[in-house]
Length: 315
Image (cartoon, rainbow, N blue to C red; front, side, top):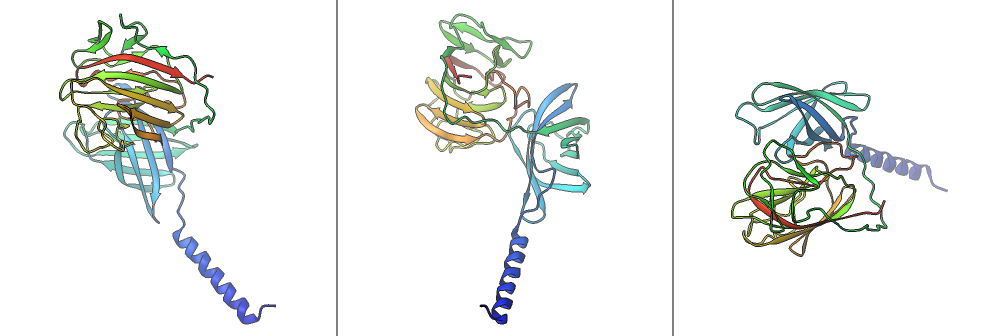
């Protein structure tokens, strides 16, 4: 049997261990998590995204994605009352002016609040928790689908008044900046093969489900970054820059299942089964739990595409 002295020593150790655990355990706030936002901005409803989490003992930090641009770090999310918070971020591609200032409140596990834009205008926004997206382990693939028939734009539409896209001798051509091109059909999980060619200095992108951009840009020889060739824009950095020089035909083979994406660029796996946290700038919407189209960015620069083949998962 243990002596009284031993009992005391064991008790002291237990108290110290409990104190140490308490000192280093993370706090939990009901506003933590990832949120899909909708914002009434300049007369339109635009998608946005917000992440809030603790860093250390006291500080809430986060990331924010607006209707355009990349994911932006939030240095501190300040609690100002029961379920209420505020933060500000400097402008990225917005017009000159002040910081963007956000006020939010948690109600019934949803968020709502306001944004003061760089020009001083105020926009209302709401947010719901980003859904968990299923990832089936044993995948059966369906029949490959040619999304572009090589003759015309059947099965596609644009998101603006200007339709500069055209079919030329089996090639889908975007000769100049204009509207984005979107498939009429929507998809959930799939493999996508696509070939493209851009002139020097051009920029485009492929939006998976219309929400997650795989960047296309003339970045040959650059150090890999999440905003460069092969990256999930603003979120996932490719492990190498597999871009070819401008003017050459290049390929992406992309697999998206749930939130997990693999990108093979010009035969090299540059992103391998990584989780996409949320929508990227320029997304069509923030309804992550729904099916979505393939969207090709056409508002940045000229580009050509061919052999666009999508293989869906069997339902």
